[in-house]
Length: 144
Image 1 (tube, rainbow, N blue to C red):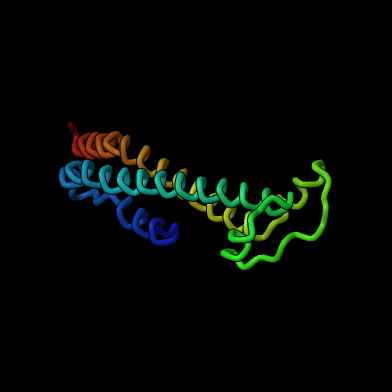
Image 2 (spheres, one colour; image 1 turned 45 degrees about the horizontal axis):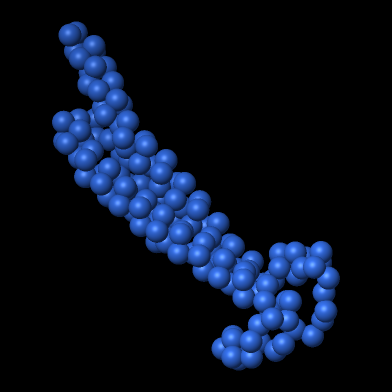
């Protein structure tokens, strides 16, 4: 799921053909379904990324507090953390940890992607109003 690809799809799908308003109206359920499915998939991915972040956060907490077992250290290819840090200083290490920052960035990306898709779904939900307005305008111009 790539934001740039989705933006291109939205750009193509958002064009309303003024000469085929009936067809555009009939296309609304398909568009809504398409982007609603993408939105729900995105929400599921976001939840998985959030869980991944929290799991790594716990592991990093154990690492920085010296409670991480040797097997887990070996699995991640980490050396034991050599410093004794105070409890109040632990957030400094956690917030600046590269692995946690990378996971937080991925989580933020998917949250923003979900926000974008949610706004697209809302726009499609009310697109029938724009089509109705275009039909009314054409009627007005035609003298009806």
